[in-house]
Image: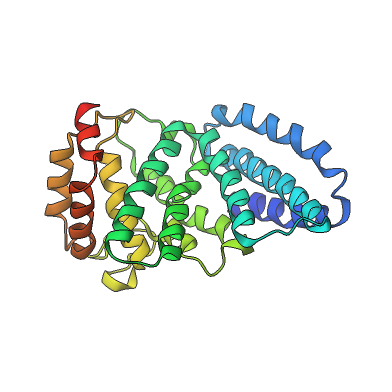
Length: 279
């Protein structure tokens, strides 16, 4: 069976570029109502095919409008620097994530703050820290393709549903790699590998140890901690002490022990631990 994600997403990103190049002036007339229509229908998506269709329509439409604005500014006397373009693209994609699932949006911002602190603790460059922060905001981008019936299920996932959920890192990666502005950054690696584990039991590729990029190893710890300490549809949040204990127990198996050490140091020097205890 043909992969619907490839057909819909590829077509939108490919033809968005072609249409912007040739008919940029008329495109907003088509894309703005198309985006609004897709946003209204997305919460009703109950199958992977519908989620892929509506999400691809939203992503393609938003990036289409963004491309028009960037093209207009490039044609004017305004100089566009890479950071301005990065911010515009990032903001657009974050808006897609927020539209799809409020939890994913808040979770991504929390993980970004944790991971930035860990990266600073590890003395990574400011550029690397910045890319890690951006990558965290987009690390669950692929979840826009997961049906609501799976994404917001209030009980355990079936094996089939879990396989659908496990596809989100690769799906998000395929969106990010279509965007030239993020080439040469760690963002695509974060999106693709943040569920890999040191012992090779993670997904999507089952990488081990240093096969996993350091940025993804950082995000894996922060992602797990925030997921455990946040209320979900299928369980209540853990207390921070319990979550930290699980992180420590899995250092060297699921998580990079060096990253765990820096994570614990960063947490002990911030007020987030106290905030989570109060909430």
